[in-house]
Image 1 (tube, helix red, strand yellow):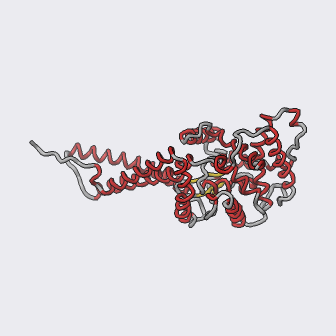
Image 2 (tube, one colour):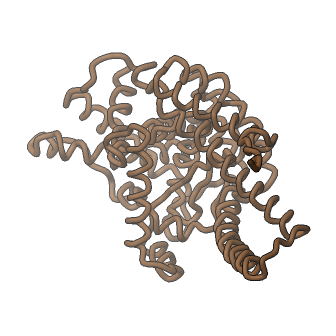
Image 3 (tube, rainbow, N blue to C red):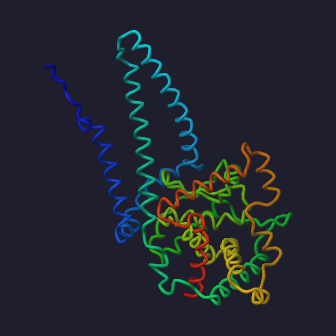
Length: 386
């Protein structure tokens, strides 16, 4: 009988490395789903290493490395599809000629497979350790704001009144250009440094916010980002806090602080919204303070309209005309620029983005999906009541 040698899957060193790495990361993910104490320990003690190492490497460039890698990934996908077609055609010719041709070409396909394999492994590892695991840590409320699950109408009214009053007062204190648009009087780097300082200050109360922060990264494709209604984005595979450069400038400080919180393991969007708010309003910089109040004003106003009777709302203070003008994602002129450069309809792009975000959130245990962003109201109310 002819002896057939069985190939052992784990005999190859490369295969063993991939297998055990994936096994380890998957085990960490499973443990995170089942143990908040472990996830809290991971976020506070181990996760900062990834920000410190990967974040420092990414910070060597001014632009967004993550954005470049996404473009490279699209190109790689197209290239791999073409290579697969060429490989199948080659195999077809070899079968017709009833021979195998070893050598440089087979070596190339082997190393190409390994390259693609490690690209996929890197994405899985970084997405898991720098994002998915963190969904299972204790919430800000559980760790720092113990008390009733629901705050009363009086507390909501007080939080809204405080926010709108401060916003009205600060709207007259920020610098403006000839068109009345708010502008930051310092340099871009000074704005970055002010946001870092504001976040480090929060680290005194919330330990996981302490430590190193890289510079935030402006996104080149901000017009396309605007079509998705995205103010900022966190890339787990490059540990970068990215922000939209097209949006109304008053959104920038709170957005940067929001994305900075992701770099510290705060992955829930309502909590990132909260830290963007808290860091900015506690800053010494008036521009940051105004940005912070504006970042939650819309959420609070919607909750007030939903929960407070009309007769009471009539007695409450409202936002000044200038605040209303400043509390926008994009101005009409900015939207016109976005639509002029659009390759696809904004409605289509935004819908696709919402579907992706909804699926990503629900997959990680956030049952209310995108609606979870508005839970920042609970945190703001507790913040004022504390």
